[in-house]
Length: 254
Image (cartoon, rainbow, N blue to C red; front, side):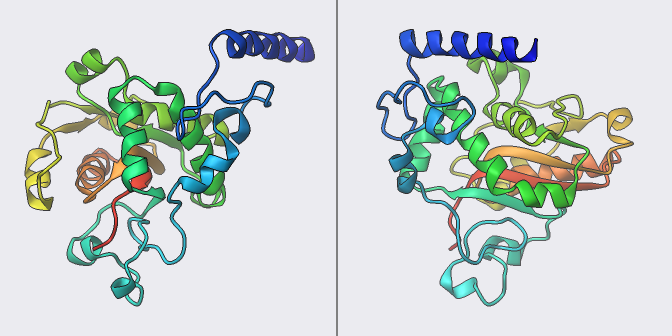
């Protein structure tokens, strides 16, 4: 029965690939037909992966971004050396360069939701051992306000979080944290301005959080850490034991 189900699912996917072929989120070319599902080759041109700015080498031991040459000795990026972080630590897959900015914009503003599949799979593979070591009770997304969700139709952080949970077997939840205030865009604001903008923006359910020892909070882009910090503060207040972050992209250390 299970083999038959897999066969039907594969045939259904093959039909979809023929009439609605998936395009590589990096070069936008049609991906060759016939790659097994849930593999990198089914989600992007393998040669295009070399164009992505994967974070390598020394990283900030708090936020996970690549360290500048000046900060490699301290182990902390410029932001984390200046600000107290309530989250345990965060992980980031890519540096936020021009290519990554275009791809994230496509996912966030141009309804290219299928492109999120690639980065979720890459993140799940890259951080599998770290997630196993943390052994979180659940993975949750940074929430968006209901008005923005209604306008956009989806929360890009939830796309990433749901798929990472599926690839790792960690439970996915969306009932712990909501965005209670519709704030103005964070872009263009400094760290203090972002913190002020997010005051009271998130609300955690104490009854749902009480038994959560640790969780992983997923977002698309880590810039100053203000969003992750604001969510962490509210989750800890509601009773969560420890909060870890996982972001697809992180801004560069300065």
